[in-house]
Length: 213
Image (cartoon, rainbow, N blue to C red; front, side, top):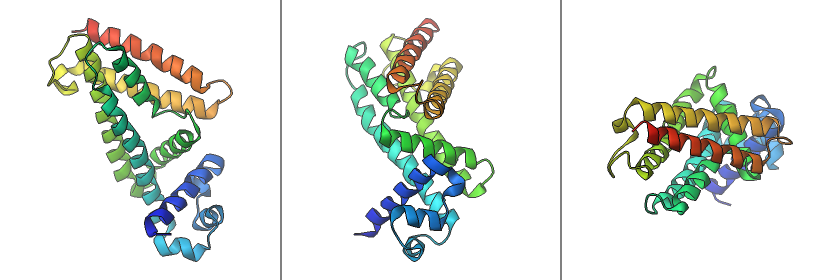
């Protein structure tokens, strides 16, 4: 097994521990046990728990961003095409715990972002990943505006003014809230309900963005 694959297996163990025991449970020993490795094997790749957590945060962020950027390709149909609307919902669904893989990533990403408030070694990645996700959401908002004829083909969220910045922040907050609610109350906030709430929010957002331009 090469080093890249081994590191990914270790990151997977970190995410599973976070989902069951929280970030505080992700010590080198616990991660080694979860991954079926000796502590020395984990130390071969990571010098300390901080090193392991920082690497895992980046790996989880990159997994989410890879899915988002792949989903952006689906936003290429012509404005007003029903496929565009479905593509927007598919993309935004990548933020949410709609299956086991996305649930583990969402749980870990939220835990890392929260921990970054008091663990300075996580702060840089928290800022990087937030900016990258916000950029994707900004592109979604811009496409919604184009669909309603409010901006030209080369417009950006910043070009469109503070209303779109507010709309993007509103959407980000909604996604965070939905993800947290679904993780805390999975028996109530099912994947189907997540999709319904998200679709309703996007439709309302589209109308507000269109009405303001």
